[in-house]
Length: 187
Image (cartoon, rainbow, N blue to C red; front, top):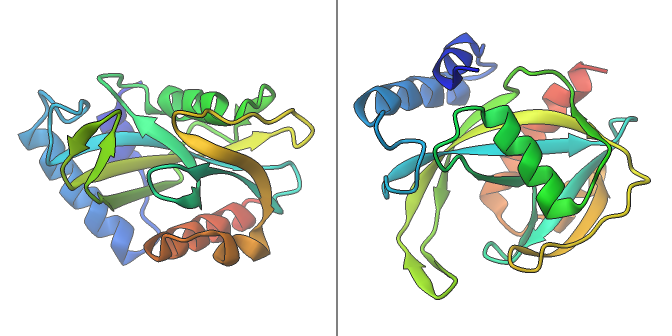
């Protein structure tokens, strides 16, 4: 899979996605040597899984330790170009689900997200941007969930109509609503 071609093929659904796609492609061209790694301390690519149950009425979320909020799962590409694989691995590692599959292999959303300064494993991380590539996954709600203590302190299925009451990162609510709307159009 060529992640650059996947981004180029992505059809934006709104002005935010059109703008973010244009900026991402410009930055990939400019920083191709390290945009997939955290060596680029200004901006780097991440893969995210927006995971629903078969009924499309709940989202699998984790209580993220750094962000102190319920959030989707995801992680850094760390050099890997198959961002679908990155996103799926992160869903599995962060939640414990075993019965999961991509809804399809297409990107569902592109978002440039701001990451605030924080400490990870005692090391200061400066504010930076995540060029976030998101995919939709469907998982078995009956799977046993488990936390990943170094990253989260909770894992649960949240009814889509309750997302706003769980998410403490207010800037993420519009991102989740956009994904829920796209997801519901697929039913």
